[in-house]
Figure: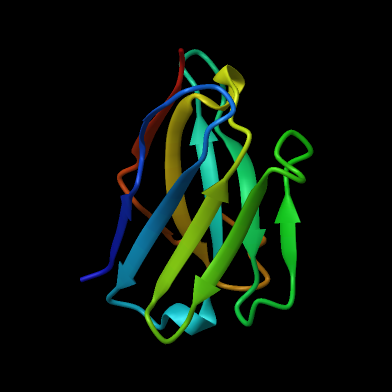
Length: 120
């Protein structure tokens, strides 16, 4: 049974930091690129950051470059998103997702999401 379980969301003040984690099981984690997406109320889902299977490539949305860092641990089947200098525009539900390279079609697996709220 494939599972992607996100954790680490919550309420944080502007300028603060959060670290999201996603624990994967039920598939060969190291064979999949991993992506964090987010969706804010009334907005379309957007790609936040993607990391390749062996961590030799990382891509970020322009809106988070320099503030967010994606990483993975293939030994522990986890992917993380370190989020710094958070602002209210980062408020969204954050989803962890897996796709098999070259990731040209729909993603293969999705987590249930974790809420991140940035507010004073």
